[in-house]
Amino acid sequence: MQADLERKVGELATPEILVMDELSTVAQAAKAMKKKDSSSVFVSRGSTKDLVGIITERDILYRVVAENMGPFKTTLKEVMSAPLIIIDYSATVLEAILLMRKEGIRRLPVRRDGGIVGVVTLLSITGNIPSKSVEAGQVETSLGSSGIACPYCGSGFESKKDLSKHIDRLHIGSGLLEGDLRQI
Image 1 (cartoon, rainbow, N blue to C red):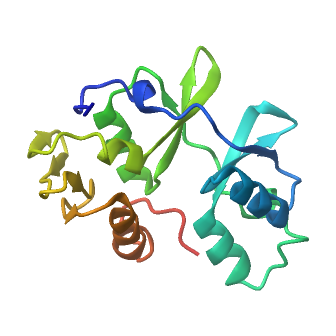
Image 2: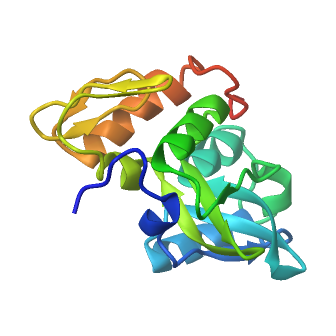
């Protein structure tokens, strides 16, 4: 079932999230990510309900490996992206896209009744946008024949993997997004 931009973001949230304490090492996080087949770890302080940041595969590569930091000594607290940007369950898909675009991120924890109930990703959203042109607010997305389009520039892609590579290379990696705080 495909979503439109007015659909509630909580309906697309994946309930399984990986959470680790901020004092865990990057190596421990990488092992947990591999085991859970997850591309990110949400970082907690003390309890799993107090999320304070996130670390992604890209963060590990750019902030740890490329900077010659030891993954067995470096803690998540040292390299996580913080503060954590959270979206409410009842927010729309459009609001999620605009927030991700503004902040230069691709993952948002979803909050409901004061707790985190899952995560929504740029790929989970773009994979659910109807395969037609959509104009809404600041977002204008023209989808290709596959129905997968970049929410930043509108380019069409054959697969979610191709879209992810495009976003990494052109939008996040080069720092072309306004407010891209993830640059090194």
